[in-house]
Image (cartoon, rainbow, N blue to C red; front, side):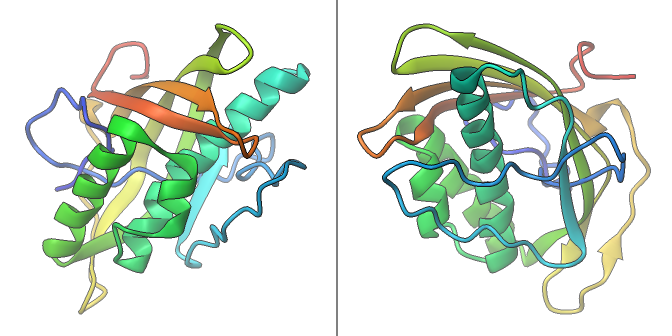
Length: 198
């Protein structure tokens, strides 16, 4: 099985792919692009892949911009998996440094295994700290209990039952680049963290 991406995943087994939705009406899909100087890449996911970001807005313009790009950095990983390409421009647009290298390696491992993703993932409990005008940190949980591995060739979905490891705590660091994009530069994940498990 596959696991949420991140260079610092504390789990040794690869479980489920990060990236989708719970159908909660109070949740929102990935935030729409903000106005900045950058032309943002397409992040359209296949019809059987959904993402929801619950409570992903604070009302503070800077914090909301950081959260939006943190969410897009996750979506870019899912997008790259579904495209079967660890070198998508979307991934490099929203991630940099060790986060990008780790995510590219992770996507490649999934593609090489002949798998992709199907299902829904809910991102929630986001906590944000803005350190200065160009750096911030975001942590959040992912509920992957309805996320499944899918064989890329046969399209067979492996609906493994959910466990405590279906819940992932992500810790990220972001930096504002010269295009006005908050790029994720560091990304760590811990599967089964009690802060995220029900």
